[in-house]
Length: 128
Image: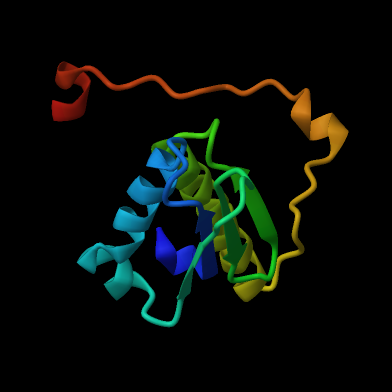
C-alpha cells in the first residue's frame, strides 16, 4: 500500500472515541511489509488536543493529495482506495514508458464495433 504513497499524515485526538480508523490505519502503515514496500514514505502522526475530527491525508507519488474523514471511513476502505489509485498510477506509468499517450482514448467508432469472440476448442479437436 505504501509503495504508491510519498507521505501519510494521521491526525487525531487520543481522547476522541472516533479514532478507531486512524489507529487501525496507523497499524497498517507501521507493519513491516508495508514499510519495506516503500521505506521513503514519510509517516506523520499529529496528536491533536482540540475537537477536530480524526483525518488521514495521503500524498501519492505523483503529488496528488487526498484527505479522508476517518470518522466515517473505515481503514480498510481507505486502504482499498489507495490500492485502486495505485494500480491506475502503475498503468499510466507503463503506458508512458512505452511511449504511448495517456490517457488512452478509444475512438468512438471502435467502441461500437462487434467483437467476434473466441470459442474454446473441444478436447477432440485439439488432438487432430
